[in-house]
Length: 103
Image (cartoon, rainbow, N blue to C red; front, side):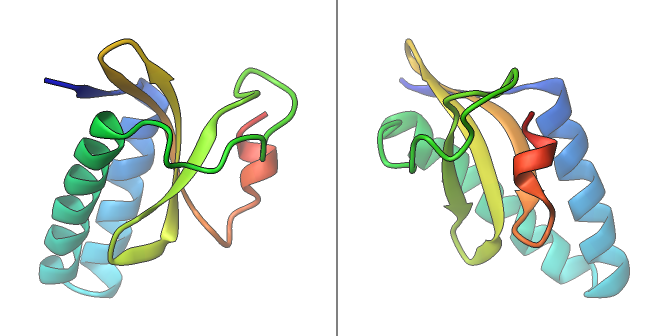
């Protein structure tokens, strides 16, 4: 079974976004976000080639693929395909300067 391994920075990103949504949009929205993130991570683990490659061309995240969280398309997942699944590097909001964040 393919797995999505979440890096420390991605876990921290998730917690920040979850807390923000819980405060601003309510706990129900935050819980739906959590479920959508988990489902999208599982989808990426099964089909690691579906994300757009090449958006980040330099820095430690060079070559990551980008994919949107299903149902929360304004959130972007930066990940790397790896043997047996994917490594989730970061989880950012589309309005953030993700090019800077992913350097």
